[in-house]
Amino acid sequence: MEIRQLTVFLKVCEMGSFTEAAKVLNYAQSTVSDSVKGLEKDLDCTLFERIGKRIYLTAKGELLREKAVSILNLHHETFAMLNKNTPRTLKVGITESLSTYKFPTFFRTFIEEHHNLSINFIIARCEEIHQFILEHQIDIGFTLDDEVRDSRVNATTLFEEEIVFVKGAQSAIPDSALDLSEEKYLLSKGHTGYNRLFYEFFDTHDVTLGTSILMESIEGIKSYVKQGFGFSFMPYATVAMELEKNEMKKVQTEKKFIQYVQILIHKDKHLSDDLKNLIAFAQAAYGGKG
Image (cartoon, rainbow, N blue to C red; front, side):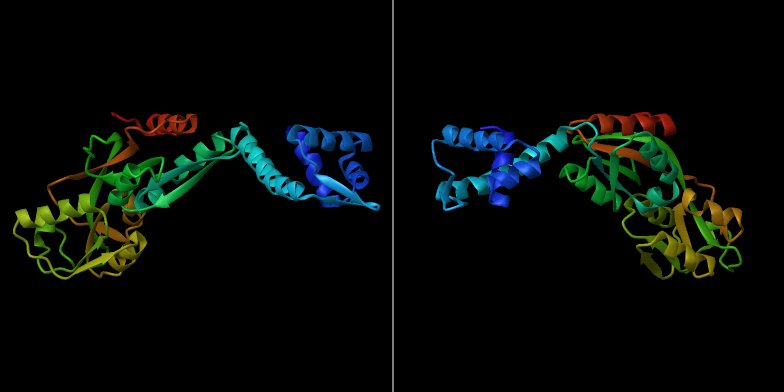
């Protein structure tokens, strides 16, 4: 039983005629007849019966039609999957701050240089990306957090990112972080690494803060801060433009706060060529100490 025989068989079923099937397939009628006869011989059954001038499927012919559709679909799917020109997809977990402020040009260039490759971005918090890696829900993760120390995950540090205190440029909020007692503050949900640094700093210096506001959106936080509503603690890359345009100001502190931009991959992950290329591209673009 061959794929070509099943294709001819299904076309005869569709057209209800050997002659019409031959026309559509651009085959000689004898070729179509011989193909169906070959199937009947291989399967040791009759697939069609003639009643007058018309042909009808037998019970076994009906059964084969159902299976033939599935077989041909699977054949086409397998061929497409293995064809080197078929579009491929990488599932990439990445934080909002990195996807919006650090990596747009990087990924645009990578995709332009790797044809037929699609990237499915999953924007998530660092701890969610870590969990997605462990559950094999994504191929690779890009996080901005504390350095990952998990034996189940291969983590490569690409670069360090400074986290800074900021306030609105015209805000009356003090210029020194040690003078922020009772001031309202805004933080991004889910960034456990630099939120931890934030609270540790004020606990160490015995500074009692005011009302806290947690938000999902970095842009939302920036909008409030620019209007003078509280201060925040954010990756420098997310506020660089506002600082340059004098829409925000840094709140000064002697201490420098650092978080790490890392690539995360499950230690048992099979590295496809596409994944190897992405890792190499990131390391070439940003470095990476492994």
